[in-house]
Length: 423
Ligand code: FES
Image 1: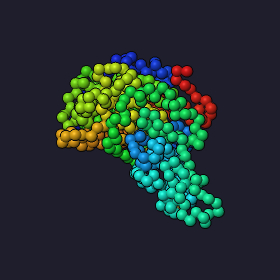
Image 2 (image 1 turned 30 degrees about the vertical axis):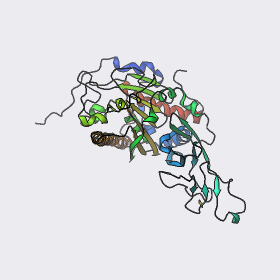
Image 3 (image 1 turned 90 degrees about the vertical axis):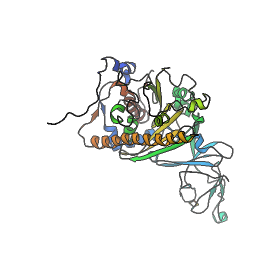
Image 4 (image 1 turned 45 degrees about the horizontal axis):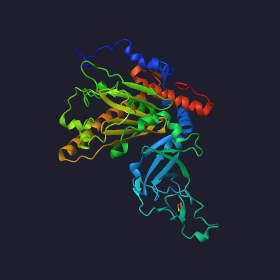
């Protein structure tokens, strides 16, 4: 006789509890969402043309280019661009197309580095640029028809920095400033000491999945008791609260903000303390790393767990006490993406903290692999055509808003019309 599968014990939700966000944001609708934008080449082309070539994109943080001459390179496939981001000798952060003006070679070949001299020589024939993008040296310059230095400079890319987050816009003539693009979501970036918690480590994964499927999985905790039931048991849910409801949801036209409760009764194993963001680094630094204003933990809940600040189109900033992450999902095609996670927190100071730190990294990696598996499985299943829509409950409002915002932004640029929230 077959044995029953071991299913989690659940308590049904009260009938109306799960419809708060439907009522707050009726513009999003309640019905099924088409999966066409996940599987269609046409949608990918629209996303390239009307989103990734138009929007301000977060490409890193100022601490990645902390000193003059430091640089990072970002390959933004969806915009067909390689971007060199550097800090000039004058302290300014600038971005350029990573292309030598001589014969078009990629100027910088590595992912990050530092040129203390401030000189960026091309490895093909030696054309050399300074940190303002000016061409300053050309071998055998007299053999060219005209003088080259100071004339054939690196093509600049619109760049902005807000609260330590670096943004670029690949539109040669951006239709809005960074400040206009961020709008009210900016208030959620002001109240957390992002710059005081340094970048510690990162993970990245190339996946056979549409980029939005990755973003979806990092936009709700509905899945946590199931997918991560072994990795993070009782992280959010507890016996009297088997499902976790969001504490606050604020949707802006493109961006979104929300927070979730933690489980104050959760008793982590010692080594997990660090991993779960309750590590005592805050106390160690005299409270300097506490959230400081209404932009974070907007619900002021005593059991606050974490916030998500979503920056359209592809960045989630996950904020916890003393720890913050960025998840970014970079499309490579309609069914391929690069997923990048960067973790910012303090350096451990003792052997015990180091041990916990290493354990935490592995625990996080295991949970990410669980998430990643669903991205690829979902992509494959949706491409089969067996279903053409997905069904979202109220607590998946971030997922619903994600599809809505992408569609609206495409309509805005393509058709000159879109719907707005709260206008
Ligand atoms: Fe760069 Fe020739 S392509 S120097």
